[in-house]
Image 1 (tube, helix red, strand yellow):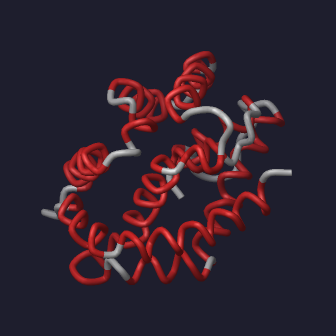
Image 2 (image 1 turned 180 degrees about the vertical axis):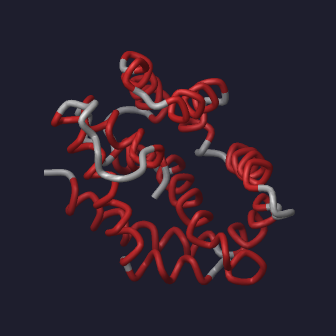
Length: 189
């Protein structure tokens, strides 16, 4: 799963949210600079990633992108699953996506001094482009994929996967719904 789902599965706990956000920007297991609650957020992120990678519905979803994007299929499913979460956010949350995103951004910025430099740089991008909210539209997803392609290099145009997503949206929605219900049960007490 990508950043929106990780934030959602932090269950409105600020310290978990911060740890979950920075986890992809940390290497190794020396987290002595962080509070125990932030460390728990880092571990939560890693448990969510392991759960996701092993889940049958996630694996089936990756196959949709094998035609032309096999190497990046996991990344694509992470992003498209965030799109499906954002698009159907009211199904999972009692607050609107826009309000959720603003609350999460506020938590991140209030802990900015604790964030690694790469997390701070990414946060600037997230807030400037209102990524969590923009995940709800195909236009927003296309922009995110285009930016990601630029960062990755390798002459890959991940935004070209939108056609495959559109052709398989119903199937991916089914996979996502099954997957996310199990993720909620696994990670939100």
